[in-house]
Image (cartoon, rainbow, N blue to C red; front, side):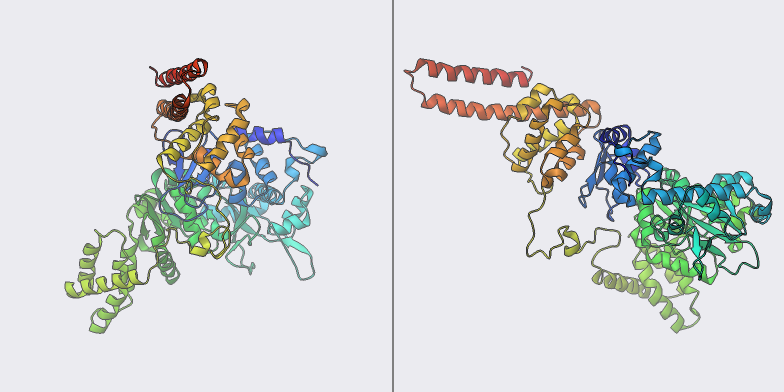
Length: 630
């Protein structure tokens, strides 16, 4: 059994890791105030970004769905790995050597998911080396005939699977992988008699990587006539490979997609290669499945798809299969905030063939000559009818009116209504009426637009109840109230948690002695008081998080990542000092009112007691003056 990773190593790896770098592999993050980043939440579908990351404190939190935590929890939830695997992955990224208690094994030997990833990495290395072997001539010829030289093959990690039964399996078993691991990874299959054999044989191989660049599976293209398998063969579903959630080329394209707010969705591995080599570095492709909802969720996060300024360009073959794919994509088009387009090559050429015949510039021109998705779909629909007949025009109008009614930008609908009128040869009023009727039917039958938060009352309840007997919700910024006293206490705690370097320890010592009107925030105050000897030290927020009762953990994390009203570090410093000073001033004012009450009740004849209260009032006034800088 694997040994336990030393706690000191867990903390060191976390301290050395910038959480923004890790989250940025999955989500396009944008500045959201000083020290804060924001993006579309990867844990639920949303239109406006509510997912916040604070690198300085090492935490993330979504104010839409409530998910939050540190970098380890992010990886655990995103990639379904164990805590130990998350630590090992980040340690490997840093080149940090972990130590295990009880003489446990090294990191490379622990974790089922890690073993499957390691098996895929070893298989990729094997395939790439074999592309240069003498028996891989068919593979090299296939690539060369499509315009890909050895440099292109190296760039995309393309390899070759020998046309033998057990070359890969034998190689990986020699590297220490078990038969069970090879079967779980999908690299080998089992025959009717229980014997194992390589899944990929005599084929060109493309490594399929997740958004972080880890190889999770493979796509393979048939080369030989006696191969009776499918033209393209992919890794089956495994614990690390889920074809509905993976896009080929996304690991290479993600930064350009995030920068340019454009993604080009093509239909195959060679098309992705051709686009990238032609200068279209935002191309991706699905892996053996249709473009679907899960792919959209992935792309929206990478695009930062919340402003509507982005572009999603689909390329489809002009044949029946391509038209069906276009219609399927159009069915999900409304899930994007970005504008969607279709690009079709001259003579129906796909990007790979177009580059081969006409060069890189032709591929770029093909993408730049895109047409709006709804225009493409309208033309496809009209092509099914005989527009020379009244019946054909009526049927075409019935099909096309909902398409025009569904155009998200209302400024475009009148223009496309007129264009549809010209294409049909009908009266403008007739087409306008049909579009308006389609819009009314769409609105009456729609409970919410796809892509928005569409959680039912049951789905929105995280406790799993039907609402009749619900447990008290955990404390959060959403339910603590918003009266002025609570806001002041909230902001003061945010300052102490997020910017301890700007709040003097002496003032924090006074703050934790102050009275709080909000009971939930008072719990956080008490945790700060219990750890004040570690103030500004490493893991400051972690100490508070670990000290509060479980129902208050999310509240601490929210306070630690919530944006503050400041544009730069100087503004953050001013906010932090002033809000803590205001809370202390409020506390001094409360103490003054209490002292004045005692003074009124004091017996003037008791000069000593009377003078003591007067001295206390004088000291309070002096402290308030110092707070105000007077």
